[in-house]
Length: 110
Length: 116
Image (cartoon, rainbow over all chains, first blue to last red; front, side):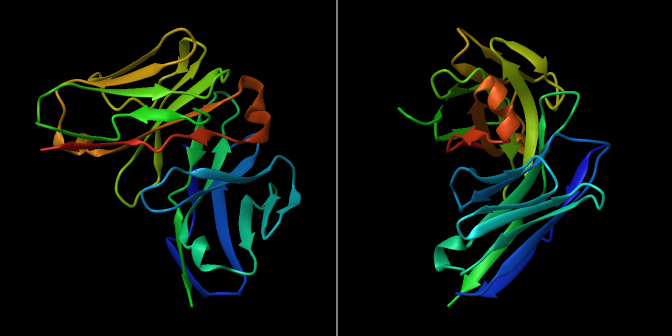
């Protein structure tokens, strides 16, 4: 089956840089997405990598390496409001289903 | 409204009762998804609609779960004879059909279901 793995928790201090990894076991997919979800809120889209390499959007960057079955989300200049859960997701090639990882809970400390 | 709207936001029901959860996608979005999220867990895929048809319903956990979409817009997820393990937040998401190339889904706030 298709599966994605993420660390369950990450802790960092305000102003720091943190990297959240996503490794996957799937025979192929269209791209890797990242979502942020605050407690009790809806997941919101952050970034998408269709191709290998780095995508940058403000303080957030995302990276994909298909050859290594690996991607990551990089958050810079951490702020307290970045405390949330972060999910990676892939769209499978033979259906329209997006498969989500288990999520990483980020805690930003003052 | 501009976003995906779900109702009810909270539903408490007794074991064995039927429940209906509603999703209003963003206007013009042809793709609609239902996911389930248990407390502190990831998102579990339930069903996908393209227009009014459901080409992928592989995630429905049992025949107690069903969903329909009418007019290419509103969708209803129905759970019959609810069980305690059905307690979760049910999330609806939509996207423009071909914008799947961007990997972006637009989620609603979810319907929190509690089965006593």
